[in-house]
Length: 192
Image (cartoon, rainbow, N blue to C red; front, side, top):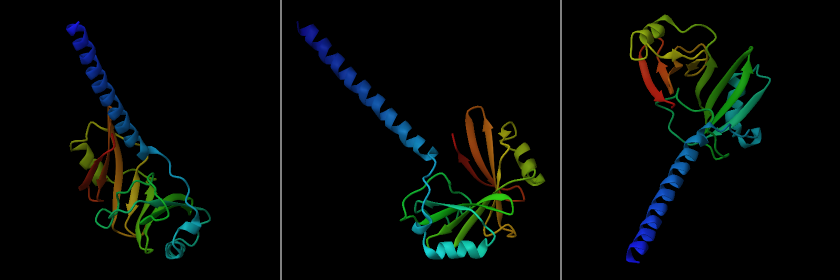
């Protein structure tokens, strides 16, 4: 009888431990997947007037724009690295506007005070030679380079301060590599 009670007790403990572990893993997976959710469109009325005014000063020929809020973070030092698929409420510290100008799809990021942080453009040509040489001669030489990459400008497309965002993949591993125009690796960001 004591053996039977002990077995039932032990099975109960194992069951509780297993379910706790399983639910903890499930919660972690949900938290990781949340960053892949497309943001809900933010009404233009929720964006501060100074941000909208500065956007139209910089991009006067825009016919269509889509606004998104972005959580409060410090993008001053790493102005080229934000995830446009994250968003928050109208109390955002930064705003991302997706727009078409001169036939090109672009995204610009502004601070709450109306200061432009960066402009992202799809790279329409081949990667610059110094970047291709850096990739082929470095740790990522066996990795596959994605077809769509980005040119990120500090202010506008005439600005010399720009960074190239390159997506590379090897098996199930994906990274964003951020390079300066001269081929220096600035940041390696693991996606998965």
